[in-house]
Image (cartoon, rainbow over all chains, first blue to last red; front, side, top):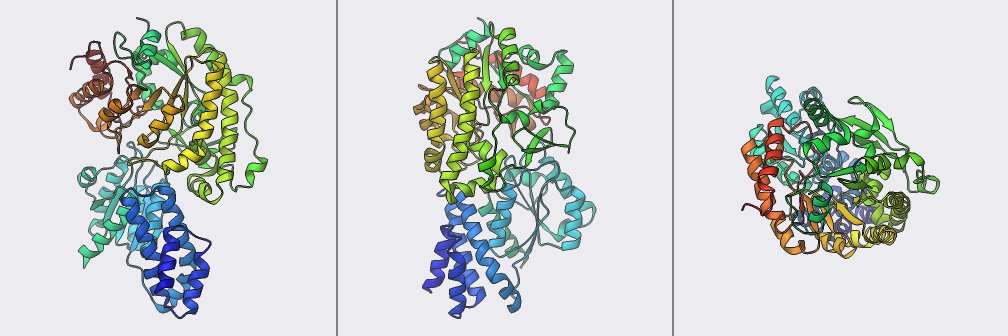
Amino acid sequence: MSELLAIAGMVEKGKNLEVPDAVKAALDNGIAPYQILVEGLQAGLMVIGERFKKKQCFIPELLLSARAMKVGMEILRPLLVETGAKPLAKVVLGTVKDDLHDIGKNMVGMMLEGSGFQIIDLGVNVSEENFVEAVKNEKPSILAMSALLSTTAPNLKTTIEILKQNGLRDHVKVLVGGAPITADYAMEIGADGYASDAARAVDKANEFLKENI
Amino acid sequence: MKPRERFLKAVKRQEPDRVPQLIRWGKEIGERLSSIYGVGGEALGIRVGNDAVVCQVGINAYMEMSIGDLKEGETVTSEWGVVYQRQSGFNNPIAYPLKSRDDLKHFVFPDPHADFRMNQVKEVMSAYHEDYAIIVDLSSSLFEPAMAHLRGMENYLLDCYDDPAWAGSLLDGLADYYIQLGLRAVEQGVDIIRIGDDIGTQTGMLIPPELWQELVKPRLDRMIQAFKKANPEIIILYHSCGDFRAIIGDLIQLGVEFLSTMQPVGSMNLSELKKEFGAYVAFKGGLDTQQLLPHGTPAEVRAGVKNLINTLAVGGGYVFMPAHLLYQDVPLDNIWAMLEAVKDYGAYPLKT
């Protein structure tokens, strides 16, 4: 449908001012909210995510697309709730203790949310206990943690250990990322996965879902 | 050979007697080294073997240790109106004075002519300039302060697209401020002006190189021209963390002849960079602080230093430095191994 392709193009190009009218027009034409979400907004975000992974675009362009996605989502969300559409899975997200860096974490949140996940963002400087509490209370499928500093990376490990001590480790997939983190390090500390950027975090999260089925 | 001569010779891409060094650290490592050597401040750098002294007069002074003795978690508001919170030995900006683009109309930049701004420069010049190279650091200078200190990262990255003229006008304000401040340092007779703007990430440029060329490059040009006009001999050192390979050609074109921090990430293949740009610029930095220094063994650190020197120091044009300040996760044994290896492998002619 050409109007959905046009919406996807607007998200891809970050045209946040054009998205709301296009989404409303699609709804007026009787297209289902879920279809607008998947074939319009998410399709556009997926294109920019792929381009980002191939280094064909840069962080601000991803931010522009995420913002365009968000304004479209704001219109669709109440309608999706009415139709009973469920998120793919719940993700608890945060930056570890003593670390106040948030843009990487925020981008992971935006990309995951744009891809259909429900995000519980605990913010920055999140203690091990607060991560564990959130896993206990929110029962997410995925716990996504970020550490930007080599000095705070060990807090990823201690959080995983405290999850274990609380018998919660097997209830959740743990995804980690941040500048000093590598796939080897992620494995060494007992995480389930590592992503080097927000687009790859979405891939990892989708892999986790497949494993669970 | 005096350290100053050694340092400047290397910067001029000639071989001194040995590879000069300039190692810097965060507060915690500074305190540990200070208790071992019994000296602090600039004298500690000299004691550890540095050939140059750095005076930080830029906005990043608030991120490092010069903001006083903040305790972990405490906050402070700077003269720019930026709120910093101390966490992990580092003052992180957490609230920004430019909440909206309109706020710039009423924003008052600090006074670059305030007397106190040159106090440290004057002291360091009289105490060390005879023997040591003096670097005045104006970082962070343009894009980074706009983004990370004054407006907030996501806001400013979007501003660059939503209102590029506004984004540029903020950079103009910063360039004006730093030109006035930098000229005062040039007048003092310092050797090197350091302009720093973190524009690289782990995997490549933070923003499209074309955006940097349109928005940042003309303002950087204006700064460099002003300093070179005041002193044609002044050396311009440019620093970015991460991978900024895409703009190194532009920097050389603007008259930058000294690059730091050469973090070995993304496309920053140091041997390729030496081949491609080594005839035009000297390098500083390059020893990995994300994996090797915190997690490597002393033997691995030693091998890393040797490899780095044999990659970047051939024919001169290299100053040894880790790719960042040393933070508390670096074991002292690795620091000793690093210092020893610089001595062992840094003498010219190099041992390959």
